[in-house]
Image 1 (cartoon, rainbow, N blue to C red):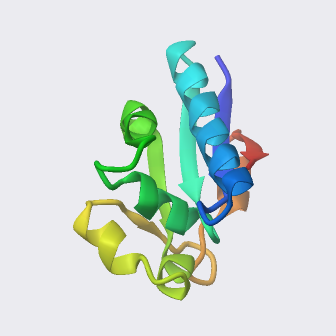
Image 2 (cartoon, rainbow, N blue to C red):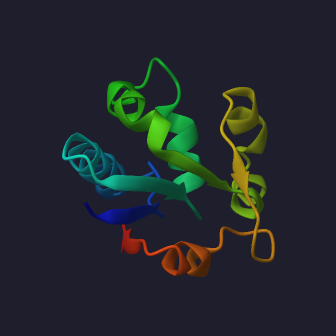
Length: 118
């Protein structure tokens, strides 16, 4: 069994960004299906991506739902900076702020997770 943390930095403002966001979630879905231990962290513009895909009207909302139980959270600082904190809060997503109001990626490494960034 693998331990993988998928770190999503991509937003949805461009076609390329949306593609990376969906690819990150597809990897998480594949890992989950294989029985691996997977955590998803949304950081930077990825917080905007999470807010966008969490809208039930978004065309790729189903991909997010398939791995929602693997979402560790969204960067608290970035959610505020990108203007999506209230949206994410209303939709029940946790915020990560272990290192200077950002997620602690080192903490995930300490727990034995391999980090893969999108």
